[in-house]
Image 1 (cartoon, one colour):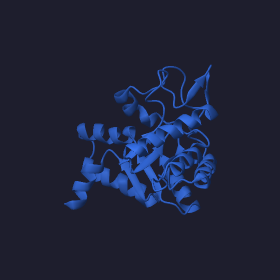
Image 2 (spheres, helix red, strand yellow):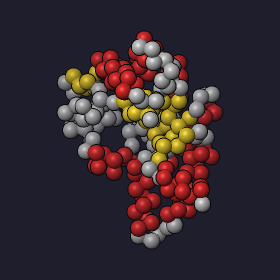
Image 3 (tube, one colour):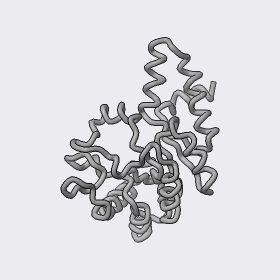
Image 4 (tube, one colour):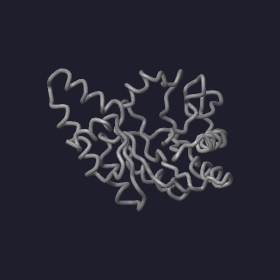
Length: 210
C-alpha cells in the first residue's frame, strides 16, 4: 500500500503547504510533511509518496523514518510533477483545487525540461527510492530523460485527464478503448517507466491475462 503524502487534504485553502500571506512557505511545511509521512508509515503504509513538491521534503521524511526504526519504508518521490491541466477530473471529483491562486509556484512549468532533471537529482541525493514523473502521456520525453539520467526505478503517473479523454472518446464511439488503453500504456513503458500508476490498472490487468 502506497500513500500520498501531502497537506492539501487537511488545509482549508487547499494548497500543498503552509500559507503565509499570499505565498506557500516551503521551509515551514517540511516538518509537517515529514510528520504526516511518519504517521502513514506507523499506520502500516508499505511505501510513502510525497506529492507536495516542497524542496527538501524527501530528506526530512527519510530522516523521520530512519529515526523511528522505519528505515525499511521506501519513498516514491513525485520528482517531476508538472502544473498540469490534465489533473482536472481528479480535482473536480475530490474537490481538491486551491481555494485561491494556483500551484504554479511549487509545481513545475510544463515548458521546462531541465528542471525535471534538477528536481529528480535532488530527490535522489536526499534518499528517494523511486522517482516519478507526473503526468505521463504528455511528458514521455521527460520520462525518457529521467530514465537515461538515473539508476533508480522510474514511475510514471497516467493521470485522470489522460484517462478521461480516452473514456470519453470511447463512449462517443470514436476509438477502440481497449486498444488505445494498451497503446497508451505501452508508450509510457517504452519511454522508460518501470512502474505505471494508472486508473486503467484493473482493465489493463484483465487485458494482459486474456
